[in-house]
Length: 216
Image 1 (spheres, helix red, strand yellow):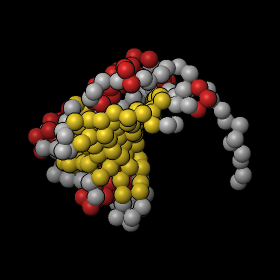
Image 2: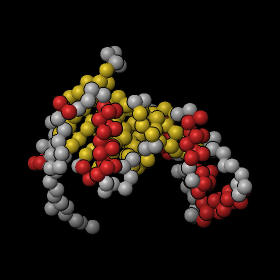
Image 3: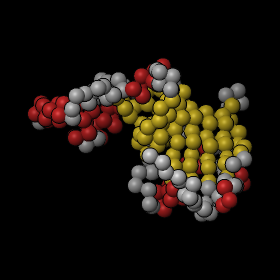
Image 4: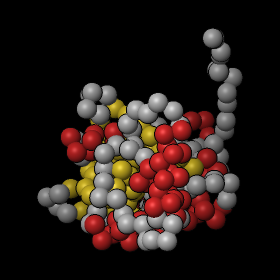
């Protein structure tokens, strides 16, 4: 296996990011960008984000999860609390999430720490999910080794019979996390690889966000 990819080239020239147009609070810029990405189209799941954690083995690990809510308090996603990512978060709550939106040549990188949301919030979201997704949460011991896919299919069939005429409760081992940011970096592709990079850093002492431009 030997493939040269040096001929991959793309020019970024759709938009720019200037300090004068950047709000004082990064959450506002994120919200504006998210809406613009949705309206522009071409991205099937604009809420897909890369979540990076430090595993119990000391290695970083990244995977795609879906953002389900955001506001000035943070960014919420859901998971099995027995999963590999959940065990990593229990050991080290510091995380990084990132969004890449090629339709507008944008990327957002967010550093922060994760905390579990309340049971009430997790339950309300669980009950809003399709029945298949609810049963799937019960059927899968996420990150556990299984012999074949048949194990999952058999569990699902059993659960479908068990809850055929019943409300499906939220599993006690399943729920949400909110990522509370301490740093945002907004990246806007520009020509000649001279991309715009604006970083917001939060000062705990001053209780405010500081904006800086980074060299590409």
